[in-house]
Length: 129
Image (cartoon, rainbow, N blue to C red):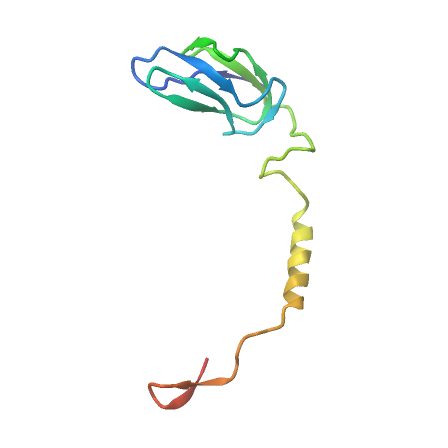
């Protein structure tokens, strides 16, 4: 599916913004909510987040003045993330590997809990810790 990303309204009475900078390149794979562009309005510079994950096709150039509601890029949501994706949420290995490593680490660490009796200064006796 192709998602058309339109310029959101940055505020009342603002009818157009300028594409200050694309933070991605045409054909890049983007993740949902990843900042893909910076846009300037009369009042502020805002980041434009991707509305979905997929391959992006840019429809405006840096420096272009675009109307609020105008399509500035397309995202092909059917595209799969490349194997070399550096996105933090990517699958960098199975959970089984992590669980095995944790189990090995836990076996290697000696039990350091103190089961000896410690003095209880309030009663002058020994209490279990």
